Length: 195
Image (cartoon, rainbow, N blue to C red; front, top):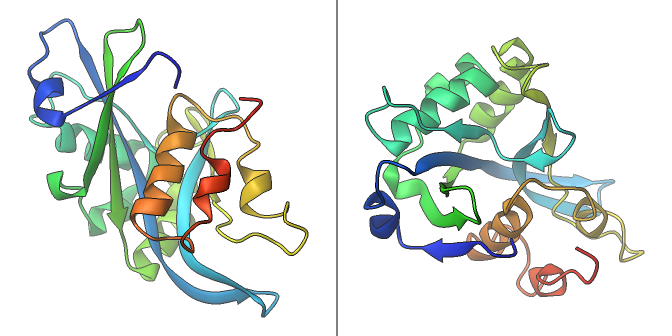
């Protein structure tokens, strides 16, 4: 995001009381299937369609009653994704990065949690019963991690959507760092010309 600054977690946690903390998580699981019997899916990665029509990751603001960033994140996941998240917990070990949001006195923390395929499928199946479904969250979507033979379909087309904040950059960084896509795939998408 233009104007945002990446910071270490310790620096973010040391900011004064005038700062708000928001936590979001990329949830993913192995997926050995092939699309049309040809395109390996490798992993299923979840994002959500937000109330404002943009794509983002589940999560939200940490409240005063939350005892930690992770407690706040797990509370938000329950509200947005429903009771299937009780089968796992996002922990400090799942932490990826923090960014100061330009001009807003907000720190955006990002996590990535590997689930079993069964856990991810349960989240997808039960999310429509979540408290915030149809309000803050309009639905879940899987990120297509493949590129079709035309070079456009799949991930390239998905990345043309509108993303909230740093979600697009967080997605690309996580896909590369966690090796969820083939090496070299992400290099073509790091600096979009028209964003």
